[in-house]
Image (cartoon, rainbow, N blue to C red; front, top):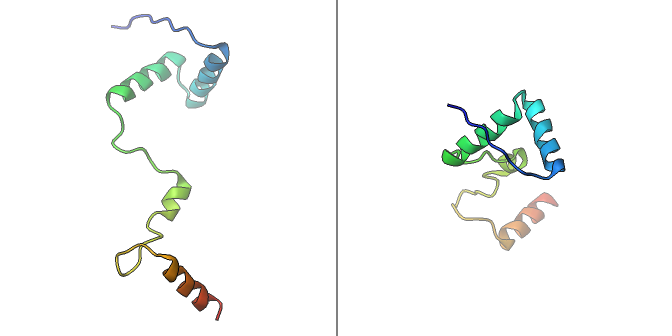
Length: 81
């Protein structure tokens, strides 16, 4: 059973929400309902931004430790030989 809900928000925020709803092809009511459902059942882990995903694992090396300043100096020496 659907019930009416009245929200009091800033006019600018309402316009932004309406624009988001239009972009997603949904009504504003459906957008709000989706948000409430998400509050009850949050995603297990939010997706990482593409830049972070591309960097994930970049600091691993064969010894299983993170690189330090000495490793960086060795890298620079090898690079500029």
